[in-house]
Image (tube, rainbow, N blue to C red; front, top):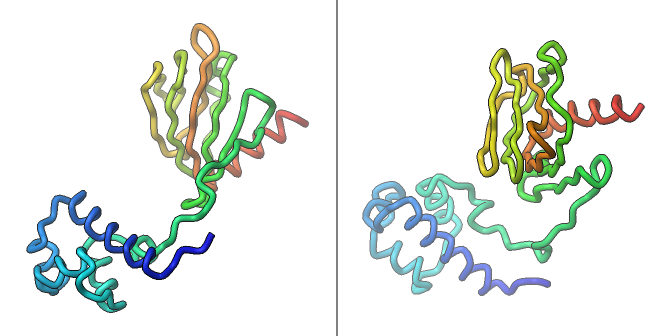
Length: 191
């Protein structure tokens, strides 16, 4: 489905206003950042003034975003299906706007390994416990993460996790580097 030029123009104007308001900026505040007048900004947001590329560049900088973020058209695909990662208890989804990031849903059933079996690897991980209680071993510390609590950490610290008192459902976001290391773990476990 192709969007008409007027639809893109309207979308950009909506984004400009939404970003300005989300950052708590008045038209005057944005005018100072962009060296455009408040009245020009108002007319741009309201569709009474033509959008020019040089103005869009100034506005993107003033709103601390990229030109791509301002003008990118929504893809037709909004919903994505999970892919089986390691059996029915492990699914993953690709994040379209951040191709290196994967969202994983895992069911953890076993206890954490002994501290000498923790691993470090490049990357970043973020997780939230959907149900149950997760034990996270991170460096020389032990964390108890309960339902609706999250953890974020640099994976260069040796880490591992396991279930405490029953199965745990976890949703994780891992970057490309962390995902590569997890794939290696998965292949070693399968082999």
